[in-house]
Image 1 (cartoon, helix red, strand yellow):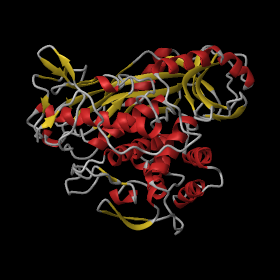
Image 2: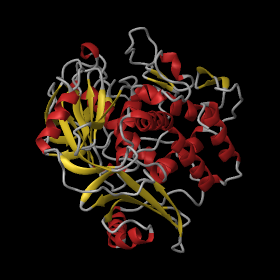
Image 3: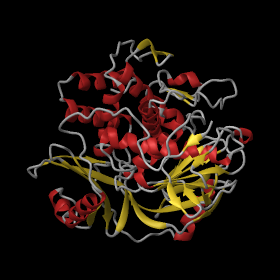
Image 4: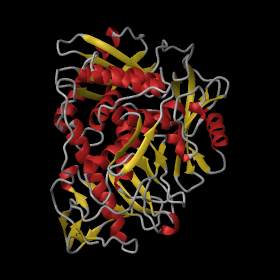
Length: 518
């Protein structure tokens, strides 16, 4: 395969429809910056209007505007100058300035008896390192916070323990420790991991930039996305890919450019998908691209998103034979960046399952959107990588339990599963909402999706399902949203987009009931 690199041009051809009224308006980078500045200038008034305490302040994190003039402003909170973890909220203000509603991560009143800690930062760090285990290395300096995600707010320390996970993935484990008793309250991993499909996408266009002696793999048309070669390293950015004749890769793993082509193409298609489907200008909505790193480590069988570098990283797979740089992997990993920039779903328990499902949902949507005949869209995750060694996919959206570990339906214990398995509930919901229950064939792949209560669900189509999930994620989900909250948020999103009496609204309700979220 010879991959021709183009300096500009769309990487996709099939636009997604935009429902009228409640879809987000695309903001240029200067317009978004101005909106953020204005919102922060009025944050004090917003706090008073919401009845927050005198010691609380709001810090603006994101602003979205709908076509009908509704403005959604996402805030973090502080208390007596301390960050409030799990205190995030979103206000929904109509065009006329009236408050339509507020989405809160917690309804608890934010207050602690004192901001003086009985536990020293060093003790909190020690607790964090012990909690992380031997695969982790050192903890950063513990910072004092108010922990509000566990019910009643408490004074706590947040420590970040950095090191390596058992498979070589970098680790940034956040450990929350009670500042009075030293008890560990919570922990979550900040490095979001995933796996994907084939390393081949056929002959594809790439965005490159002329440079001394040839071309760099820098996509100037899409926020300046860059693709780097780590050459087996596990730190830094490595070397920016450069080529003399602007003809990249040959489809074989022995050519180091091939993995870079797949990663750059996947990033381009994902950028185009978010722009076409949701009018979003880049992953963070600020017109700036993430960057990609390929050839991480040695025989590393994974890929991951790291929000601290705002980058995607890909291993070369078992025996360095199958780089994890395919189309839906890129969509999956970049969508972790979308979640980080919007709802900030904590990567543990039910919120972690929703985080991971969001990446599967949009990674799948990217694959369908690309309309690439070499890698056609499907509801299978990792179907071409043979990561299980027997030709089976990594995950199935129509019946997640087919992988032997994922949950088809919600139960009280689903949050105890690894986030890649608790995600099954939301993946199943999305499939049912898109395609409906029962046996059917899509793009030559056979599916047979069951329901918890034996009901029949009629799908509304993947494009509408994606619109509803995106709307809910960006305007109604918060860091601690669980499955019950996801049902509420997606129903509100469906009402905004299509009306509370619409077939789409009823289908959302039916699909959640079908996965036992009531």
